[in-house]
Length: 196
Image (cartoon, rainbow, N blue to C red):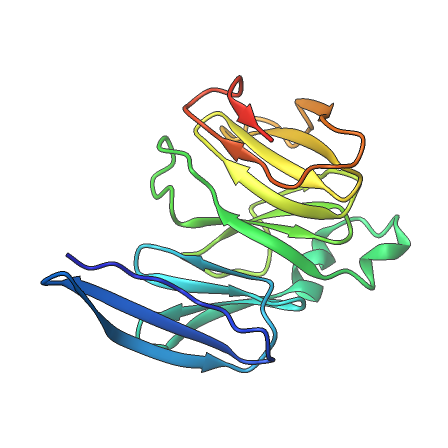
C-alpha cells in the first residue's frame, strides 16, 4: 500500500517527502526542494501542487516540473476595478471535488489576497482561469464537497459558492463567530453540514 505525504518547511525551501507504507514500515520514496516559500501543498493523483505567494507549480512525485501559474498572469483576466490586485498574492488552494466533471481532481481552486477564487485547469496549466469568483475579501481557506465550495475570508465570514459551477455568484454567506473562524470543514454531500 502506498501513502504519499507532502511536507513543507518554514524556510524558503519546500521539501516534498513521499512515503511508501509496506510491511508496517514507512520508506522514503522521493524528496526534492522547491526554491520558494510555500503557503500550501496540495497532493493530487499524479502530481504535487506547491502554492507560493506569486505562483502555483505542479510537480511529479519524483520532482519533475509539469507547469505553473503566475498570479499576475491569472489576475490579468480580472477587471482592474480594485487597487489591491497589483499587490495580490496566492493565499491558499484546494482541489475541486465535483464527480460530475470529467476529471474532478484536475481542477484547482486558489484563493488570493485580492478577494478572488480562481478555478484553474491542472491538465492544460493555462494561465486563464476556467472561472473567477469574486468574494470581496482576502481568502484564507477553501473547502469543497460535491455541492458547495466554502470560502473562509479574512473578515471571519464563510462565503458559499456553487461547486456545480452553474454560477460565479456567491450563493450564501454567514458570519459564524464574532472573532472569525479558525477552520472550516465540509462533511457529506450537502451544504447543510458545515463545521466551523
